[in-house]
Amino acid sequence: MKSQLKAAITPVTDFDVSLLEEETGRVFGCEKMPRKLTKEELQLLKDFGYSEKTIELYVDEVNVGVLEKPDIVETYIGPCGDVIRLCLEVDKNSIIEDAKFCCLGCLGSASSASAMTKLVKGKTIEEAKKLAEHDILKELGGLPKPKLDCPKLAITTLQKAIAVCERKKASCHIAESQ
Image (cartoon, rainbow, N blue to C red; front, side, top):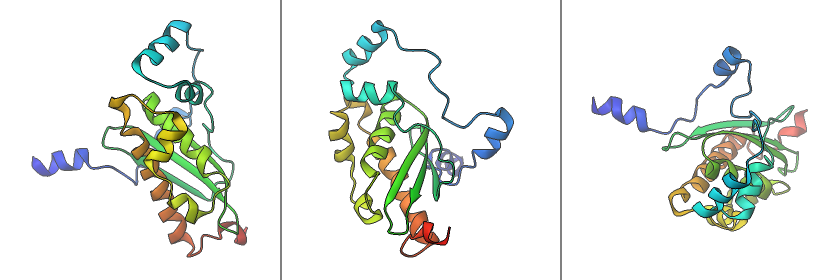
C-alpha cells in the first residue's frame, strides 16, 4: 500500500498525452477559454491576490499553444496534479527562438508557465538554466500565498526540457541538422 501511495504522488515526467489527444481529438491543455471573464470574476481574482500582470497573462493566453516543429517537447506533472507541456524551438547557437506551452491546471500554474516562456525567448540554453522561481514571481508581480508553488512547476518543466535538449545533442545545436 505504501509503494502504491508513493507512486501516486511521485511527479511524472514521461506522461504520454498523445493517447489522450487521439481519443479526444483535442490538443492537451491548449483549449481556449470558452468565454471572457466577467468583471465580477476578474475582481474575485484580484481580491484573492492575483496581480494585474498575472491575470493579463492568463486571460490573454500568452504563449499558449504548440509549435509547428518543436525541437523539444517536455511534459511534467507536478505534485499538485497540474500538468505543463513545454515546446521549445532552439537554433544552432543554442538560443531559444520560440516557446509555447499547454497547461492543465490552475491560473497560477498557467500564468507561471506563460511568464516562463516570455522570459526564456531569446535566451541561450545556459541563460535559461539560470532562470529561477523568483524570476517568474517578479515577472508576474507576485502570486497569492497558496499559489507560490506554481513557479516551481514551470521551472521544473523548463529544467527537464533543457535536460532533454542536452541529451539530444551535447551542445544543443538541434536546428543545425535541419
